[in-house]
Image 1 (cartoon, rainbow, N blue to C red):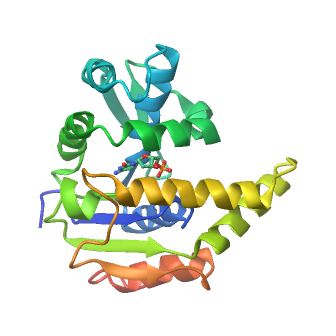
Image 2: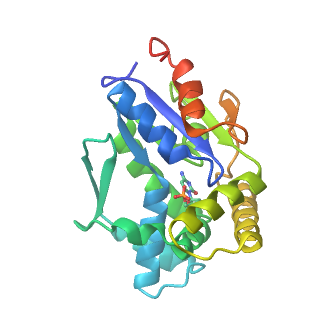
Image 3: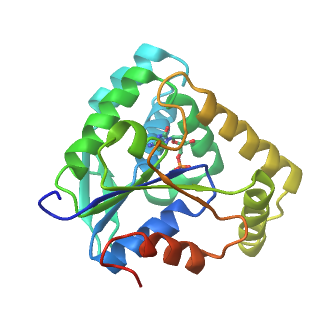
Length: 226
Ligand code: DC
């Protein structure tokens, strides 16, 4: 065991509730929670703000190297992320930023830079880290690994409902198309493609609600069955 506790990884496709589940599990254990997608999203945002082409390998790498990440643990377990001292907040969760994030994350060298930063944050343990390659690449020696998945149709349904509840006028077919496109890119990239680690516990969340997923995860954590 690491000095601060277990290192728990949660990987999986977009829209499976990894963040909500990870945060709830971390809060229950008194651990920190880091969503590593935020780092790729921050890179996407920076690339966009600096008018760098997301496919410009060297430009994206230089931007990644120049970013200074700091984290502050919040009451809800989240490690709030600052880039060069600035909190980027809700801007990172725009649909467009997610798509550029998926594009810049195909840059292998930029991934290595961000992976190093993730290791610095997680190496002492006592943390739930959520992403795409935490159990396979960032921490192949994580103490417990989870992989969450759900059908693309179910994830599109959930996103559709969320946007509708937020007062928007979403298009289901378009959401489904974007989800499938992102899955294909995340799973098909040459470097660190999205896939379950050999020793990951795979949970299909298609037919489960959030609480059931949280319970399923907690059940697998030694001495912390809820
Ligand atoms: O989880 P998310 O939607 O916030 O992630 C945004 C993008 O970042 C995702 O499409 C792929 C990339 N990502 C990654 O490549 N590796 C990670 N560990 C986390 C995210």
